[in-house]
Image 1 (tube, rainbow, N blue to C red):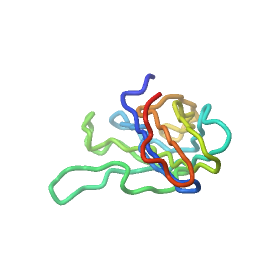
Image 2: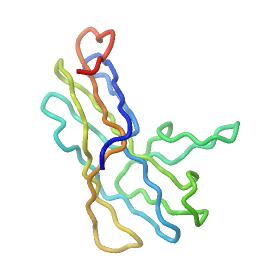
Image 3: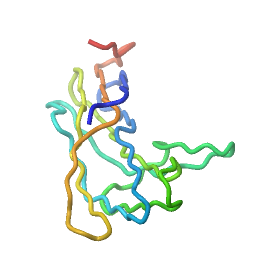
Length: 145
């Protein structure tokens, strides 16, 4: 699945930079259990940690994904409305930490999950290409190449 958007984030070395990279909406009646996530081709010099992010209901009625981050392994979610409503959408947040100066791009994620307690499945994809430009001091910008 090609990415629909991109995030370009300048950071100082050892500063964690999070962004939501995958949005998931289960079909009606399905319960999804997340097993693990791993980066595909991030490159050496940076590490990534993945989180589960449920929607957060704001005072104005909007829902925000990416604000709350929980452990990914073992997280479960389901379709509570019986429709393809955005109210059922959750996110996978990637948090990249650069340990050496450079440009690090996450452009694919391997996600392991179970549907309705069944066997483990594996999917690959990403909704947001995530680029971190790291140095000491923090770069002023992270321009596209």
